[in-house]
Image (spheres, rainbow, N blue to C red):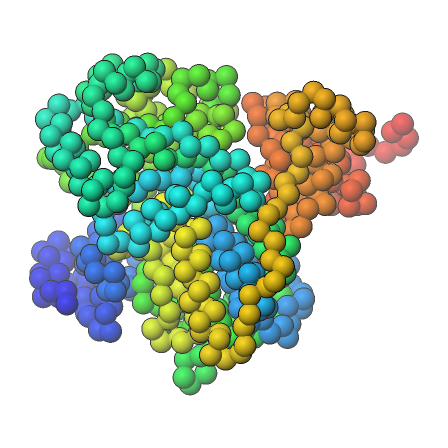
Length: 577
């Protein structure tokens, strides 16, 4: 039971009578008005407890700016009208796609809805791709439980789904000598109490011998060899494809607009821009909009506070500066940190680029992914203390994502409190990519147990766990490449010189399940435009190949969504031959 009087006293000392707090049904609810978003975040954080059952709900009115509504696709049709799936999964990020694949093991009707024009368009697509070890997480949290389980699933999972994955280890480095003994004993605690068994405390000499590019000011560090890297959007798409191959109906550009419930709190209908669906069970895996979906079902017992993070990608020519994951940890006892991130790091990605980031900035906009110069500067100022050779001059692109934490900084995986047939998968922020394979299994089991009370359920006799990826020309031996080109000459036509992607691979990607015919969809699946020129040379060719494949005009091809127009039509008339 939280001490509400104490919380209210703290709030009054800082905000006067502007913020009030109440407690009912295991919900700490804050109301009032504030004109600064940092104050809204601080107030709610003050009220948060470590009890995983008790959540903070933010009902403080933010008067400092207008919070933008959720973006909704322009597409309107009736393709979903009248459908009655057993399970409706809302959200096409790593959580929703992993859950859909797990549910596809059963003889039930599963539908997956994503409001954007492709999968992994939110935090799952703007992720650094680190497979975490859980060293920074305490025993007892859902995060720690699922990270430990999920990490050990990655080798088999990525092999089954034909997704590149590499274990390259992680260093947490320290320059402050006074932290030697506290960190040493923390390592023992994490290893023997919390179950992070691959934790190793290393001296400066051992670290610099293994990684000579690290800064010479490093005094000691912690190493975990089970840390790895994966392509986060590649894994999300692979999950979705394999789910579809096993019978899941997946729809893009399908946004949930409202939810109907009966007098008993049971969802009877989910209304979208593409028609009304009437499912038996709804899984809320909507990322930053999970609390909005909960509100539609009159079941909001937690709040999401958006947190922006920016990553930078360097040209592969700089890959030699590091072949692992590393960051310097700096502790300042005089300054209380409000950050819930390790501050980002440097890593070599699974595609052999160097990635720096992310930072962590609280924000009120759930879909503002603009990149700000100060984010890149803060990240690089920090990472030069890890590897002095890191340089902003090697950046070829950067991207920003918005994470979806709760004020408790833990996952929410539980049935609705006022809505009996909604299962919430909320607050999935870092390390969500690592944890998703594990919590998807538990969520699927929870749903199957629920449905088994309503209908007979059996496992599929011929469920197919393996997904075959598009052939990668640059990874083949010369003999295999020659044989493939002889069989299909399109593989001999190189479209993207930076990433060595052929026309044949692009056409194969277009023929995959669930691949939208857009430039960005092809980019995410097989990487044309991911190299140093960032599509400056290959994007027009990719656009042309898509137009030919779809038998449409160049002006009909989109970059990503229906609103992202590439060209409006021909500018010159006459014979172009």
